[in-house]
Structures are given as structure tokens and as C-alpha cells.
Amino acid sequence: MTNQFSQTDINEISCRTISGQLAEWGIDFSQSRVAQLAPVQIQQLQTWINAGVEADEVYQAEFASLPDFMESELLEMKGELASLSREEIIEQALNACEAEVPLTDNPYLFDTTGWHVWRKAYCCWYHGESLDFLEELSTPESDSTHEETVLTVPQQLKSLIIRFNQAGDSLKQLRLKLKQTRQERNTSRKQLMQFLNQQYELTEEEFKEETVSITEPEAPSLNGLQWQQSEPAKQSSELSKPVSIIRIPVTGPETNRVEVYLQPTSEGNWRAGHFWSVESSCQAGRILRGRCQLDQRQATFLTDSAALINETLVLSRKLTCDSEIHAQIVDYLNLLEEYPGQLDLCCDCHQHWLSEDLNLSGSCPQCSND
Image 1: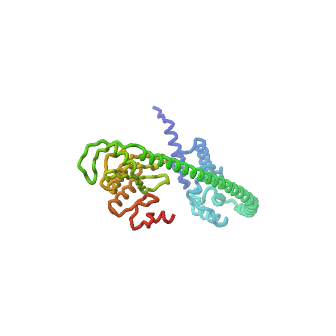
Image 2 (image 1 turned 120 degrees about the vertical axis):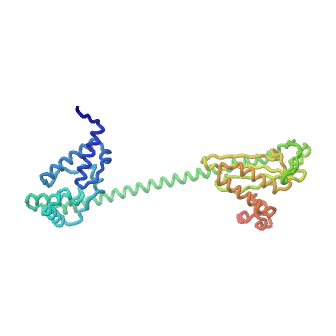
């Protein structure tokens, strides 16, 4: 019964054979690496190996050149660079031949002159041939190498100068694009700030113009909180009450704003509202907003501090879309609870400061410096 092998088995056997033959020559070219070669490259490699085996059997000094695709890899493999003189390399080859060292134990890389000199000296000594080729290899090659260096160095220098100039032009274009991009970004920020300021002004007008209609039953007070019924006569008087704006400091773009509004009622209590507009960090470029007008709050507080703390607590629950801003609001809430009655409002930036930090005009140190 005839054994039949699949094409995959044949390819695997071929790769294993090639890798094993290269290993005999001290070349670490694994089976998996051989399998990654193209079929044409595998065929070239097999042809080169066959020629090398035949040359080794008859101690032939030279055989076909190494395939181009292997040279770069063999440079990083086993072997030494031919740093010695030709006489020393030939002496090594003769000693190896006298010691019956295998011809395949050539210590130099396959693409260097040292490998060819070592092999040629070994084979000539093995066959008892003359070593006159050493004189033929010495002077002409050195002269030709010098001439090639003199011709190629100026060309390489010109090429480097051209590439340097091209890189300089590209760098100028990139700097110009970066400058234009920054200008466009600043323009967009200014337009966005103008839009937010307009929205802020409209919001303040709505707080002043809209009527308040709250009809909730009375309930016992809890932590300074009272539920009260509002009458139309009281609504008009409450609209004339001034609204205090407290801006909670948060990081991020200049457009990020978190504010609390406080307004006294006709009974001497306080109600609160808020407005926030932040750029979400989880979705770059998306701006999230929210607000609660003063007339939407049915709850009143005995003091403005209690109203501010409660409204800040509400904001800390809403602004969970950005962990950094949420943490800053919580820190601000802790600050309010740590210094009750000792915080005062800056008349310019509307942020809370310790009373001792404000000057006589009611401005904070930052606003005073500005």
C-alpha cells in the first residue's frame, strides 16, 4: 500500500531538511523561519545548500553566492567579523586543515572577505595547491576600496544635505500648521465663551422675570429645611430679592463652570438653584450641561450656608460624569462643612474664601492681584 503525503507534510519535511542542513554549518535558521519564506526563496535556499554540500564534499574553494534575502539575517547570527589580517586568517585556516577540523567550521560570517579567504586557504592547502592568491588579493582591493570611498563620500554628503533641507522645509510647514491650529482653537474658545456668557445672562434674566408658583403642604422643619406655601403676593416680592452667585472652582477648560444661586425669601429663609456646564472627559469634545432654577425649588432653608451646602450636595450627585470634577465638588463641600460661618464670598470671582483672606473691598488675593 503506497503512503500518500499531503502538501503540508511535504512542506514541513522540506523546511526541516533545510533547517537541519544549515545547522550543520553552524547557521541558526529555525524551521519556523524557513516556513515563513516565499516558495521562490525556499527554492533558492535549497539550490544554494545543494551547491554547498557538493563543494564541501570535494573541498571546493568557492561555490554559488549566498541568497540576498539571507545576508541581512546571517549578519546577526553566529560568527566573527574578519578583523584580523589576511596572513593571520590564512594561518588559522592552515592550522584547522592540519588538525582535520571540518571545513564547515568556518568561524567567520558568510558575507565577509574573511570567510572566503579562510575557505580558499583551507581548500588549497588540503589539495596541496599554491597560496599565491594572497598577493593577488592584497593591493588591488585596497586601491579600489580607496577610490570607491573617494567617489561615494561626496555623493552621500550631497544626499544628506538635500534630505536635511527637505526636513527643514517640512518642519517649517508643520510649525505653520501648528500656529494656525492654535489660532483656530483660541478663536473657537472665545466664541464658546461668548455663547456661554450670553446663556448665563439669559439665565439670570429668567431668574428675575419668571414667576414662582409653589403649592406644597407645610411640614416640620428638618436640618434648617422648611416646606412652605407661596402666595402670588409673596412671589412678586421674592423676585425683587437679590440673587447671590457662588462659583465652585473646578479644573479643566476655561469653559467649565459650576455655580450655585442663592436668594432670600420674604420670610427671611433661603432657596437655592444651580447651573453647570463641563466638558466630559470620557467623551472628548462633548459638553454636558444642567441647571435647576430658583423657582423650581420648593424647599427653603433657615440660613444661606444650609442652602449652599444642600445645593452643593445635589451637584455632587449629578456631576458623576467626570470623576475629577466630582472629587473637587466633594472637596468643596467638605470645606464648607469644616468652616461654617467663616467663609465669605469674593465680590469679583464669586468664589468662597476664608474671611481673613479677603481685603476691605471684599476681593480675594487672586482678584486683587489681577
